[in-house]
Image (cartoon, rainbow, N blue to C red):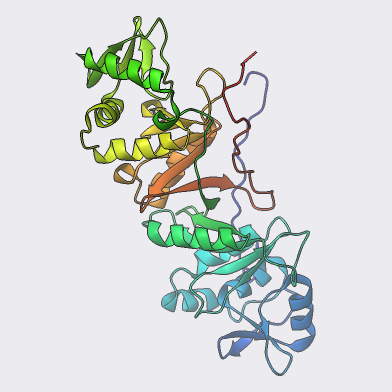
Length: 368
């Protein structure tokens, strides 16, 4: 922008204290302990009570995980066990530094992230700065590298479990630059104000059956004449050149409804969404299968971009690209997992979660 000084944002480097540029150490280093690294009771009690770090043992000492040792070194002036400690730890745990950076980012806004025991399948629980333990956790946190594959089935089951318990499903994704992006994942139950085939008047269905009987090929679908100068079923087709143009999926749905022809797999998914009152339009411009509306296309913008299972991304870095594009046009990215729908949305540490989309009307409204 003209006249504006645009500078790249600084990237944190998190130096270690035994180097000249590192943090100033005030506290003695933790010592090896079964299950982690022990901090003496006086300091340990303070870290536990103020920051909810580590776990207390029977002697009053605080036992930290390796990533918590690094967090305390960067933020609480605790010395590392030795100059070579990080390199030695990485020999047996190559992902230690990634987890430590994520912990640092997650707690940077005053949030509290408590790491679960090693035998717990999910990484940790997060509380907001305004409601700390023993209040109920706000989110269940997990992490992954950007290049890793997404376990969609587990992601779906975890999201349903967290949703039922009133918690957020939170994922921290770290790239090779040690930059962290946070996501919230939640189930989606589509609902729209449009009228599906089963709720059309019989006279309207008769008109549509007649229009289908005189269809002509057009592109991958068919061209149908208008009915008394209009089109009664707004969920299907696009008005163009004084007729209604149906794409391949819409044509398959019409053939099924009028002639009893079997649905294709994709058209079956489309009909399921349409039965929920949703209108689907091509998502080509947005790199997805459909953009989905909960009202007339001239009344409201599409709240969702929908990706079906056959085109779903495999890796987190591809998910990041899809979500970034969707939110750049103010839409929610939704993908299909085992026949169900799951939203993935960007979030920022220390900021409230984005509200879920709710349908605002029971029927089409006047745009004026």
